[in-house]
Length: 227
Figure 1 (cartoon, rainbow, N blue to C red):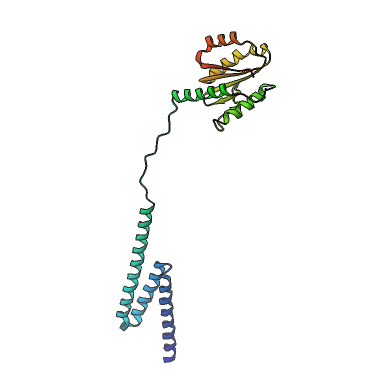
Figure 2: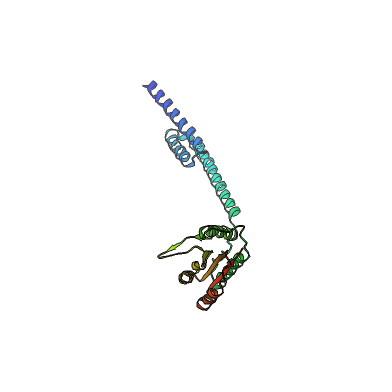
């Protein structure tokens, strides 16, 4: 019987030793698990070996001190990191309002750019004129120019912002007959309209311009290229 008790006592001591070892090991990776294991070992030891209670208490105090120190270090590190990354809030500017003056400024810029433009070659048809004009304007207004935008029964040649641009490659007067109607349709969809006319046969457009000026006023700008 005494031999059986000795074996049980040895097994119990080994079990306690394993609990203590695992508890100390977990203190450096998972404090909660380490404290639970050491607490269990502590209570088992108190029940089995009352004389070592004082030593256990000293050990537990030391463990609690380590845990508190690690928690304080973690809190200090978090506070330091938060202070280092915290920057004063800067007031964010309100999105710019699109005003009539700003729209007029873009319109003036587009008119000026097209007036000063001298294409390197003549265009055989309006499609070539549209492509070349789009490429030229995109040098100044990157990817803002759109070509052939459909709106119900209306299709613009080019547009940028609130500006519609009708391209006309003119070789004979008959091609001007429907331009007035096209400009009227543009005026229904855009605040500003530009008629860009490549007049390669130097046809007199004076009477047409006078009619458009009376009908559309400053809303339509006619730019003529005769090179």
